[in-house]
Image (cartoon, rainbow, N blue to C red; front, side, top):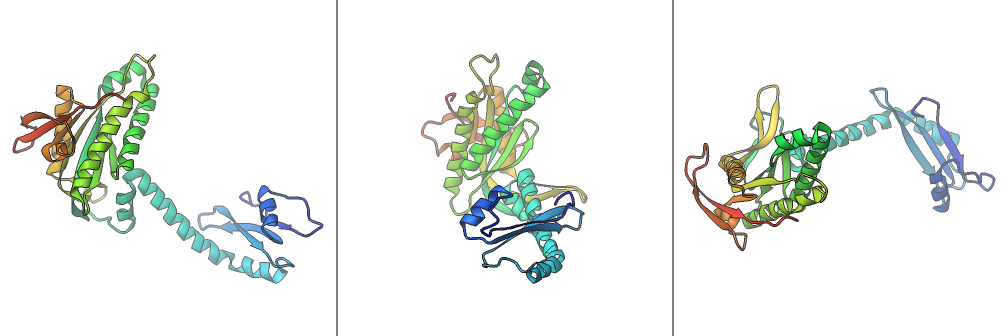
Length: 297
């Protein structure tokens, strides 16, 4: 049908024992008496398929099928709208995340559209990525990078957060507070520990390299929405907490810490290690920093 070769019909009478398709056997067992598949053409020229099953003892009449054929152009437009919306939803979720994608699909498409929310912000950065690309070669490095992103995104999602974007070799994730700020802070820290502790699984004992990361987390009020130019928007988070999270990650990379967090995040851990008052680049006031020790998984 997709090649324009017409439709298909299969009756389930006592003389029609041959099953043209695997689904026919299931339909026959469920009590179906007639099966029809006909082309369903979309406005872009694509040919899809509409299938119908009857349980009437006599199956479909000629009048039944004629009416369905006459209505098929209207039916195709209806399904095309649903199909386009589902494709748009899937594409937005893939590129900007579930929450952000839903907001964009819901009409938040103007510059400045968004909300101020309280959230834990996480920056997770792969360490030594430049050296790894040189050592492994482009193809092998990209495979490792994708597995790194998969690990980070998986743990973020499992702990109630959402990856907003991949920035080079880094992950930006947000854990909205909603009605429970402590839970958002707790979950962001649990996700960070799971990521940092689980990256060893990406390499084998025979590899002459390892995959490591550095993570910075801060909590605060951020703008969650669209920024950019008139012609190109980006859905992201903007605010002091996002800046501090990024700078804490940079501090961890310089000092050799896997996870560096602010005091309110550290309060959700049993044994944080105080790093004292940290002067962070482009952050006006010193920040009480804490390292979270994580064993390799």
